[in-house]
Length: 577
Image (cartoon, rainbow, N blue to C red; front, side):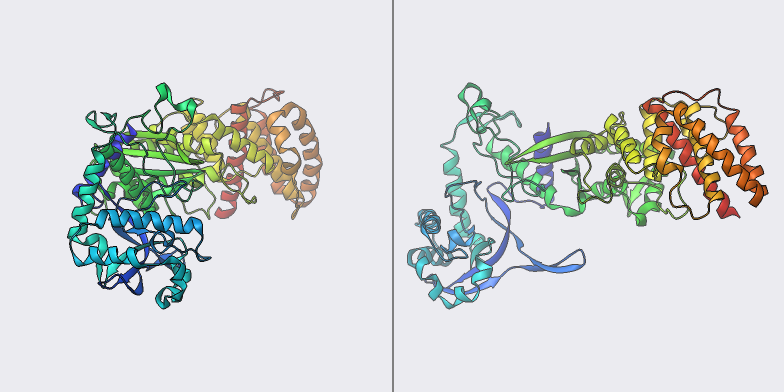
């Protein structure tokens, strides 16, 4: 299903002329070797382009269409007309050696074989270059010597004559297509699992690049290279027969998606890519903004969700969104030389937006006055589960991907999201951010079927839920302590919060005794404050029959919410004053 969706996406991209045809690919090219008619090097032309990377301006290789490149992991295998300096010039940073010479000889053999009978000045120039170039004397060439470091930094090189590239020459293109079609006649054929048609089966699939943590040369999405995977003796990718066309199409589409940095985002160790069936970027832009909102697009996201809820037309920057448009989300994670699929989800774009909107409503909770965000994106949400003072701020990999899938599909949240938040709060000695409180509320509503949860966006003064009331009571007791000792650095939260949340019957009698001494001091210094707190304590204690010996995990979440809401109410009253 994944490969079929990617092949369809490739075909839509082809109609929009955004990807190359079969047998060709986009490559990052650093330099062009400028040749004379007799194959002599006239100079080196830099093809790097200036671009903005964050706050810096950097020079990056240019994307150029070249003959399809081979998949290389080890051994010597040359590309046609586009390769690194080892194959094109027979040199590397340290000069040349036996391995580098083997690479050059492989490229020489391939180019001479393909261009032997090709007409045209360009083919003659490339042919003459390989016949006359001596890698061991490369340092004697002034043009090479001046650009040695740039040429040998691992980037790809191509050939040109002035402003004309070798791969654009019509005679060379005809030769390449003829050679490619001839090689296809010799391969193993079978039924392609993607198209369902008889086709030559692709033995090795092109590498997928752009997934952080995978090999820089790329990783395989389909690969079988160990006896345990070779059912009935079928080696390489014959175990999952994919035709040459389908293999080229899905790898090209996936590499194109991963190269769209404006429409991808990393979640834990996974890279998330997404696309619409129509291949229109406006859907990607709308999804990216809704799933990972920033402080400057909150109004836009609110309008999008409100229009969707009212059944009105939804538009993004003047483009009208079709709610029935099919939309795909793919999560890929690195796994040595391969890629693992964390999840693949597809649904109509309207349903995905509705599920996102429902998630944000469950997450909605009273916030500190300084917080300007209305919507917390999935990446910010997951950061609430990790220690922000640690070097590695990545959430648990599996959990991160499962949380996104649950949000998109409207399914139950992974239990690990809830437990990780509780663990983080305990580790931080009761430090409850609005994000953590929102996660607890959303989890209890969706997973715990907490029907009253929607009434807990702010302080619920009417409820008699024991765990929630205990959380409020703990906050009031802390406030009394802080009122009595202005400037105190460590409160009862630092010492007793975790125990009070888990085993109230053990801790609250101690806290009540401590409160009595604080109230005596308040009576002397702040009589009005004493009256206010006595009324509030009387109200809360009246809602409790007894202190439970132990609170279950769901009850601990309600305790935390009660504490958080009461604290926010206190700050709200101060702001009103």
